[in-house]
Image: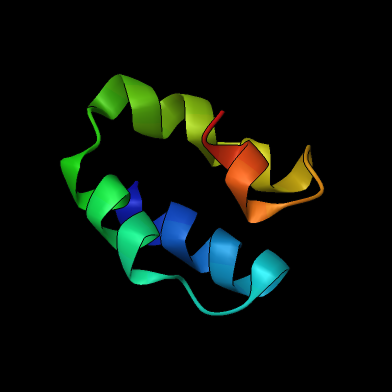
Length: 50
């Protein structure tokens, strides 16, 4: 799931900042599931993780 989410973020917002990479590595499976749809529902990268 991390790989898919990272790819979605790159396609929608460009390069993934270091702090987001750390957040993705530390995420639980539940968080990843929630975040998977977010890149297409929000306008900014920060909103993906709200």
